[in-house]
Length: 327
Ligand code: PBG
Image (cartoon, rainbow, N blue to C red; front, top):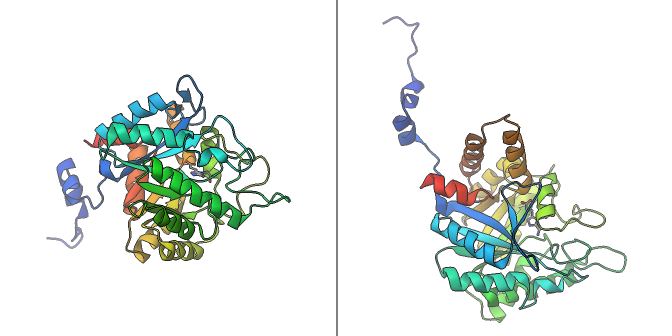
């Protein structure tokens, strides 16, 4: 019994896969995963998104099939993004009862019922010809309060079509309060709000702008999305959204903001979601395609890390694939 040997041997619990599984602190489950899906008006078949291999813009039909597959795999929820055939200054496709997302919501409600939670992204950038998240003034600035009226109307249109959760992602001040009031007045007191409360002005959204065809035609989103240099204001945004009636809050992007996920998780008593965004997806897919990293291990590690940081739910484009693997 010489003193040169270690007293503590943490490696004992890492010795076999069964031991490691037993002591794992963090587990992923299919129900924690949320699949973002794109549905586009007026296309004959699903269109691959070049910067997101494996992701497509769906037709109504292909969306139904993919949503069914996600539900079968046990994925917790899906979140819908719509791309209208025609865009205009006010994004009128967004709250049209015959708009693409509303039609898709009705399809999914009749196909799937309660088998999977159906959420919507609630924003204008996919619907406006200028690609901004709101209504513009004559001088080309985003008019916060005029935009809120549009968001209220979109919320009601989405709820009427069967959205169970709406996710306002435009980062306008006061958006959650206005949407809650509109939903309640419309009789949709049961529809919940997932606030994209913490949303950074991030370069990681690049590939999404191909998928949703929503790159701003001029300027950027840094007057409304958060500066990556800031952390404290994330809590301010979260508490404002909770005061205004958010049922759940989100941090976005996820991977580069794990410190924020942890701070939010420690500060609130509602479910916290984190969005593993398009750029996070594209980086792993691209490096794997080059043979530079192990794709499957990297995907799992990226998701476990987000969960470990404190996210209850993870929005990820790999949701169906990972759910199948976890089963
Ligand atoms: C706005 C919205 C964006 C994303 C989700 N909702 C784009 C943006 O704010 O520019 C990005 C998602 C991703 O990158 O995967 N409707």
